[in-house]
Length: 415
Image 1 (cartoon, one colour):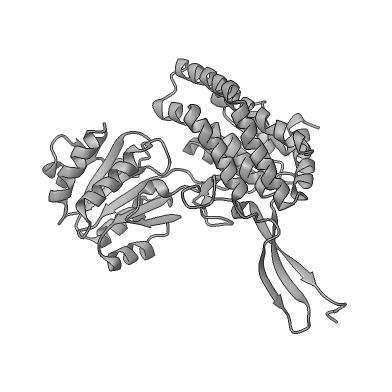
Image 2 (cartoon, rainbow, N blue to C red; image 1 turned 90 degrees about the vertical axis):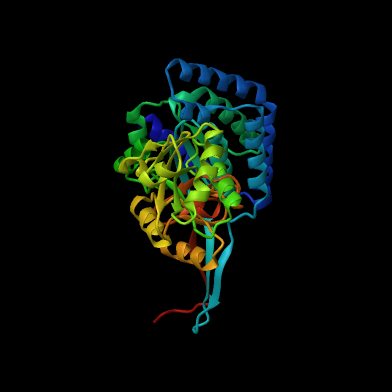
């Protein structure tokens, strides 16, 4: 038997014990994990510094370095996210339907853990803790396969979390970190459909497509985040400026950052100079259509490919449109089904925008940066799905359970 299959089987066995814990026991376990992260903060940050130096020496880009980096504040945020998840209602055992049939049998639909979740991700060492917290809260085992650029960070974080598992009397294989990072090992993991119940890749589009194309286990996917903001002709100018600045600048490497700005032609002469000044003051480069360039000097020419690009950087594509319908058509043509935003003062336009688009998150007068499990009240998210099976949008605890039927009778037979 291969090493990775052995690890997966051990994770499955440990997950069964984890699923039998009470809600209070799982809550206390996550709190202990948060405490362990804080106790090991110095070692975790030192490991992360080694990863960052090695990545910089290899010429890794700015966006990837940002995703890789931990500092005391970010690590404290990771621990806080674990405590937030611990405090959330436990989904395991929740009865979502309860009814009695004419023959007297009582039918319930009850949430139960999925089983074993394989997380495959790049950079982002916080995913090691976030994924573990959500999977364990929902009674699942988790197999973590991070990228080589974060191996030392992930190993240090996993060691702290495993210590808390052992202290709770749970086999630490319930949280398995794959240290053999060869592609062949990942491919074998993705074939274990009799052991692994779901694979969730997080990272660049290339990684996600590779997992989706090679897996025999079910896969939750989101290839990229081409997020749009449409500024309607009824929008309040400063509010719209704030939305575009926050959406583009607050964390440009995030998948919920804005990549395209659409502006109604009637408001563009007043709005675009204000927005361009605010964005340029923060280092954002603009690429625009002819109408945009006529209103703002020094804007680079936008090619059609720019409107489908996920820059993950301080670059924004801009287009002036002549109507709400034209804006919707643009989004429908270029959407990645992640997040779309409208800035408007017209409730009817807001409703038309929401109803016309099928993206996983649609927002009215709120920053795209709220397209995040924590910000939407889910606790730390395990990923974002832009596929419409099982889960859609930011995924929290409920997405890591399935509903099964529990039927109670008094000897009824069908006959």
